[in-house]
Length: 363
Image 1 (tube, rainbow, N blue to C red):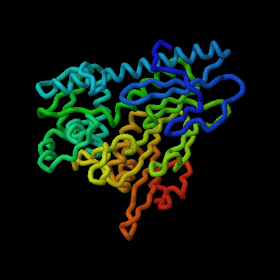
Image 2 (cartoon, rainbow, N blue to C red):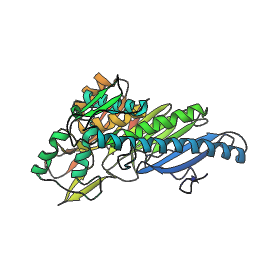
Image 3 (cartoon, helix red, strand yellow):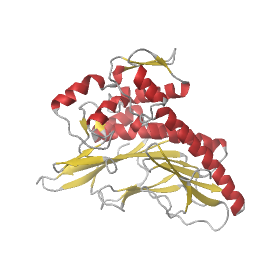
Image 4 (tube, rainbow, N blue to C red):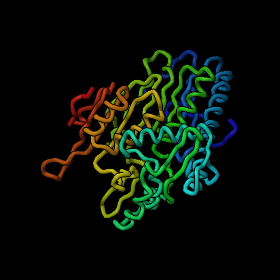
């Protein structure tokens, strides 16, 4: 392939969400795996191709090239780290007046506003100033004072963003608003890349954005689906549930990769836009939905809301989704804590050793 950063891997090079639990079939088609850095993370593509080894590899590499090119295109459109991106242009100009944008970006913003309004602001792309204030944008970590938080409060909130579908324009109602695509952008990129796979008539593939959002297209030969283990964030290398995915996405939210500690307290990068503070008490959320854009946004909504609020939200706005919520619950002694799982239409078994407190399966 043309890029040095893109290299072929063996199936044993697993993800944090493990996908290679089945054996490589002896006959064709053959499984090929590629990965590619983009959007501040690493994308992995597992796909099956027919034909001889040389021919199959050439087919797989050609498809992988198109998939990763599409992800790069979406990154150039939506990155808030690139001054030349369409999202950066909106951030720079929308406070001064309405900005006309392309249909794809406008559709992305409409999806974000939909989930912001539906969740009452639990999901909100205007957390850009918060991410900067808490030091997550520059990865240096900072605990802001109450006065600092109050200074950004007026510019955080999805109601500060006005979309006009008739003119396809975006306008900020106040100066200082900054959109951050982190809670939905990778899902949007995965959906765009899966459209490429379908257009190339790929029948069996799995695309993963650093395991936080993935899409399973079809199923491996002889299997009922792609086997994915949802990890236990409290115990590295162990799983809390196993699911078999076919023609659906899975998105997960946790604090494992982006956090910092001050005075013995761990601060998570996932913000509650309503309190202006990092979420406390939630360990992990996984969402299954046919749309990766939707599952990505929902994983953030459910991470911010309490489990009870999340169940009410799902029943009203996403009744066909499936969810697993893992929270930390303090014991009566306030010395130890345990994990509590809340499941909504979850299709995989939950390891009760990893999650001894299991809420009733909600449907």
